[in-house]
Length: 248
Image (cartoon, rainbow, N blue to C red; front, side):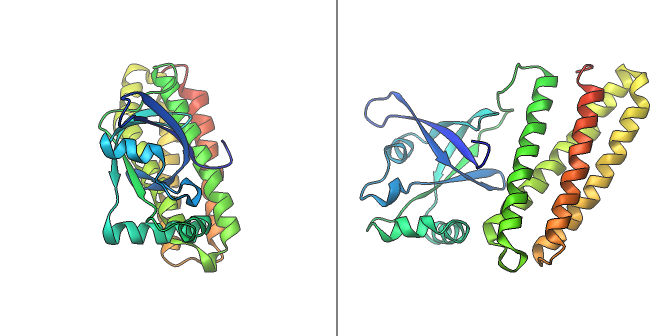
């Protein structure tokens, strides 16, 4: 599943009350992810959709993290706008809609408060999983930008990029304000390494700002900017893991 965005969605059976799990493609959308109830263009909504309508409390597994979420069925103009941008990203959704008289539903999965579960439960394990998630998402975005061409950069790809930028901002802010000071206090020998890591955070913040500006008016510089971000972030993550994991 490394060549795309997939999740396992576990719902509670509307009639049976039993747990059911479906594998679905998803799209980043800020603080939520989107899934589509296409059922291959069939005449009926998929079972998982009926289940979450009856009980919107679900479990999401991304292959790295597991977390409880609340399913929100998009309605009216919001559903139509979101579905249109997903069709732009993948025309297959429009083909499925053309095969059925029903309106194919779009569902937002909103993570419930609290950290997701994953790894061995240690800080080191959690940091490695977060880094792996960023590496994977960057690789997917890089492929999508390369395939799209700047002239046809779609709305969903912009949102995927901006979601990644927001995630990196949040992660690095948490490290800079909480993890780094705590480690520096407990382990003075890390002072130089933490100063280097903080300088890299500042460098990456500039790259993210430049990327966000390019997304509003894509130019041929977009893919090189993504590559610059990947190079800088990969080196940063590798160094951070080499220096800090043993202390965490």
